[in-house]
Length: 122
Image 1 (cartoon, helix red, strand yellow):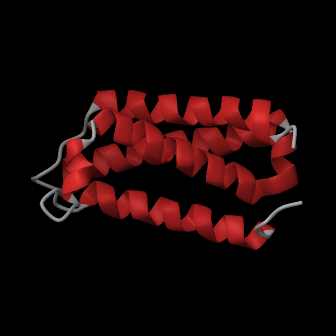
Image 2 (cartoon, rainbow, N blue to C red; image 1 turned 135 degrees about the vertical axis):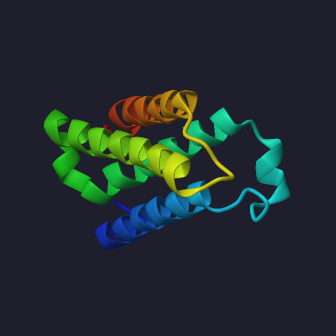
């Protein structure tokens, strides 16, 4: 039994998607000091882990099929690449970083493994 309804997972996933976009494109001076103390790559991995998990939960039973799970993961991976490109193109205080893309991918991969091994079974 889900504690949150299907629609609530969607709103959580959408909110995380928007928060990552805003957090990725604003000046780092605006961010919280504690965020700056955390390794940038750990922050990327953790953010994309949460983002992927939230979207997999939002899709619910559809993600029981591998094709749907891979579609969610691929879409989030492309989203991360777009965010990196926008950082380089739209801001002068951030830059696109290929290592950030790798960190995003690692968060996505761990989320899929976690989802398949733990959440799908429940």
